Image (cartoon, rainbow, N blue to C red; front, top):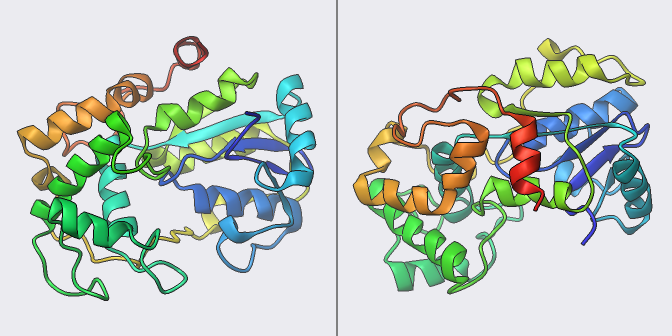
Length: 272
C-alpha cells in the first residue's frame, strides 16, 4: 500500500499528505518554493520533478524511509465537508478541466442520464438550477461511497478521513493537521516548525486555486444547497470527518471549525 497521496520536499524538510480540495495546490507550491525559491510553472499536480511524490516511482523508497522513521515534520490540511463536497461539484462535475474536457470523460453524461443532473450546458456557462443539480449529485456521491455504484468514489468527494488514515495505517504519524479555513495560521505553524533551504514569507505567497474558473460561480449561500435530505446524505458520508476534524455537522452555514484537531484522537481512531 505504501503512502499514496504523499509529497515530500527534496530537502526532506517536510512531508505532506495531500487531501483533495483542501488547499493542496497552494501547499504544494509553498513546499516547492521552500526548496527552489520559485514556484512550479503550471499546476503543481503536474510536476514530475522538484518535489518527491508517491506517484513517482523513484520517490517511493525515499518517502517510505522518511515516513517510517518519522525523520521529517509530517502534516496535512482538512476542510469543512459541506463546502468541500460543494466545491467538488462545481469544479469536477460542472467545470471544464485543464485539458479542455469534462472530468473523467463519460462521468458527466452518466450523471445527466442516470441522476438528472444539469451542468450548465456544453461549456458550463449557461444558467441552470444549481441547488437541484447539486442535491442530485449528492445522491450519486452517496451511492459511490456506500455501494461503490455506479463507480468507485472519486478522491475529490471520498471522505477526508480515508485519505488521512492511509498515512497512519502504513506507519506514519502526523505532527499537525490544520484547517483550510485558518490556512495562514496553520501553514505558518508548519513553516515555523521546519527548516527550509529558502525562507517562505507566507504573506507574499499567492493562492493557487487551480479549480478557480473551471465551473460556474456558486449562485447561493452554502446553506441554501442543503435541505434535510442533503444534510442526511452528508452525515451518512462524512460523519467521521465532522467528528475527527471538528466541524459543525448541524449548520452547513458555519464553515469554521469548532475546535482544534486532536492529533491523539485522530491517530487512535484512524490507526486501526
